Amino acid sequence: MKKPFIFDLKTYAKENNIPIIQDEGLDFILQLIKDNNYKSVLEIGSAIGYSAINIALANTKVITIERDYFMYEKTLENIKLAEVESLVFPIYGDALSVDVSGKFDLIFIDAAKAQYIKFFEKFQKNLNEDGIIVCDNLDFHNLDPNKVSRNTRQLLKKIDKFKQYLKDHEQFDTKIYHIGDGISVSRRRKI
Image (cartoon, rainbow, N blue to C red):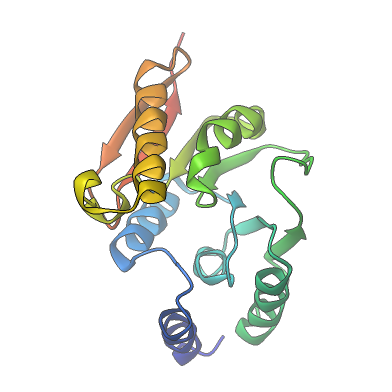
């Protein structure tokens, strides 16, 4: 793995307006993986493979789902360039239509924000007993709902609804960290 490649990938994302996880958020997730010795991650939303590649560099297996064919192809290309093909396994398709078997230490949701509740409900069955579900973009750039378009305001309402869903969830305890663009960490409640 060539270290400058990650920087090049980040530059490519910025130049092409491709949303990738912020540095602070990525560092936070990588620390969670290290501290808990997690070995398997299911990622919902690959984009160009930036976070999956970084997670793989922590010697962690990643299955990542991407519905945009161009992004999926770019992820395949970047995984090869990063030399992490033995750890990152992309799936092309809409995560709500894709069936994934197996259990994971960490499920990382970073896809269509309006679908977060559906993603959470669908994939919680794939979580190991002591695993966590991490969701990104819960602060959504700290946008003021009064200063954005109607569509963005609707999206902000859906993100708020998801945060309330996490708060009220009977099976999971969730903490929201104002790191990067806002990250939630959900753990199963101990019975």
